[in-house]
Image (cartoon, rainbow, N blue to C red; front, side):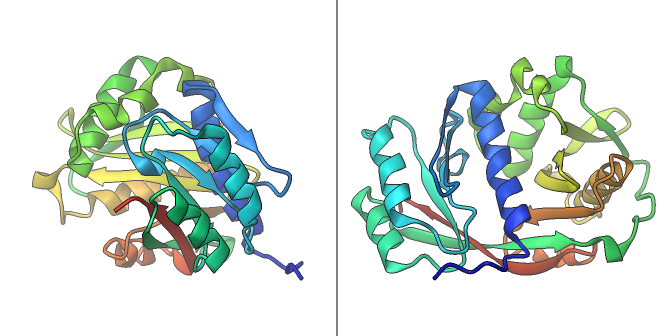
Length: 256
């Protein structure tokens, strides 16, 4: 029997919807199953940005299999995202496509009880929303911050992304030089935090924390008093210092 009480349901659904919206305006390759499982293919050459995502606490393995089969043979690296530990049925579907590496990532939430954070003041750091004519600069900076080829994020910085309601890119700058990034997706009283990255030579100065808090503040201004993000284990303590708390894991299943 499926659980009726699911306080993280709105957060998990919002998480999946962000991927769906990005894919809708980049490639148009999106599908939804009857149980709400989302297929979203951005076309980026990285598995996590082409995904089948189940927002349910009890993923429907048959639905995941049906969505996977509809795209087979896959022409991009891809992944399956589920909440908690993948069950044997989901693991079997994933393994059938060579997806055998499971990476749990904390799903962290900052609730309204934490209140509006103070204005982040770090050095002379300036954090600003990025206009559409600078999406290319944003893409280059976020790739450099994650230390990956710039091609990975190029598909996600086209002008079509400016049509997504509530989606904002952010740059952190020192004397006009980009040193960090963030992306916020505000919808339904929730602020999703993504792409928090700092260039290697500027790390350990509190810039990632400052960008995160600025995006939370912007969410408050838009009426979203709850924020969420998916963190690496390494970044968990930074987000805890911003008031986020790990609520459960999102497991991302990829090829080795």
